Length: 533
Ligand code: 3UK
Image (cartoon, rainbow, N blue to C red):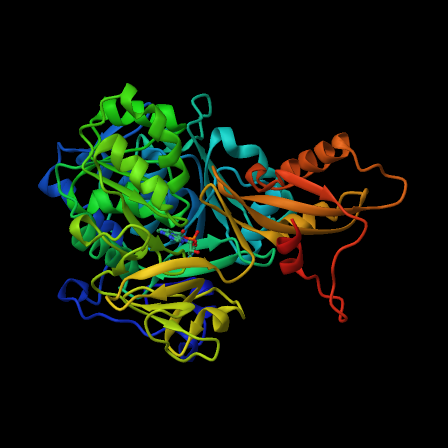
């Protein structure tokens, strides 16, 4: 092991709790020494002048990207004396600089912990504490919440800000005089390089650990067998790089094949369409609801450059698939992925697509349906989706490892059905996760916040069906005496949530109740609330 800091390594689950890993595909036979940043920057030697990353303010060729990554490595090493295995938090909207920072962290043998730009101090603090993060690279305009989190969690000792033009100690200012070459850390293929945080079903998020070989494996599976991406592709889309859907689709996959990625800082359905037109994008990654919102606007733009559109994060309704196909002529590629699995593992493209089904396990992965007792069930029976492949679940110090891994299978928490042709059909989440506009929201986390408000006696949060967002967060609230259940109280509670945690988690619907249904043992019965709404 090249690691000097073995915090993450020593908090891997015991091997007996790991899922089974499959390496049947020859492409997945990686050498023992593997640094994924080196692999991904290999195109800098082959196509130095090719454009790698396009951002709103800067464009980097492969050679420029490689040089910038090396300069950042020098800054991290000389300024911070980081050693392999140290965790580095990344905080920023999608941009070429953010990609360069992630690659630099990997090149040094450190562990990247990307964070969602919308997170507030409270959520950042949980990450700092759980992953014991000592250093951060943060875009200047998102510094406030991180500095607040640092006050409470001084484990975070060092922060360098980027995109800070007036700051003489900004990342750019420090990097500019540094040499443009750097000898990468000789990491092993099974060393940890990435911690992906998921919002769990309880308030505490889970931290998934991924190896250098995992990063390569997702590049050598879905993009090769389903997406069939090529060097002349131009990738675009919306998922944040802190969401592994976005990290793969908008950074790793394009770099792996020497293609170009367009990284949008801000977007809405209209501006994404315009960006597709302006950049002649060929591959788009986003969530089903976003495609749905783009449909009525498509005819105003020339999007004929698109050849592949990928939908993931939540179930793709058949109506959205057909509306998109009518508007663009494109067959959507639906795919289910998970932070634990790093990326998509069931999908289909072209003639293999069956509308309404997610698809089949992609080459390299296997899937089946398990019943409550862990027995395999046959076609036509709804049960728990179970999957295995080259990637899989390893939580950092988390007892919930045993919930996700069952007899070597990764059990995603989704209710699925397999048909006799081996296609997998999504039914529902098996837990209480609310998925709204592609974001995972844990009901108990919102409840925890509401309960902090002086007016709230009791509350319960569920997801209710919503045409536009898939689901929305609904809170059932029992007020304390002396407080009035009216619209201004609803608004006060909504604002309170928005100010405390990421705003997208706030309850769009609130209903006041005199009491909440509970079992004899005092447990909340969320399913009763779902039935009575
Ligand atoms: C749900 C889907 C039906 C499903 C993700 C692509 O979503 C990603 O990761 P998360 O950890 O959530 C995982 C859960 O989301 N889901 C995702 N895709 C689909 N349900 N159809 C789909 N196509 O409940 C799953 O268990 O946030 C998606 C790539 C990387 C990812 N991390």
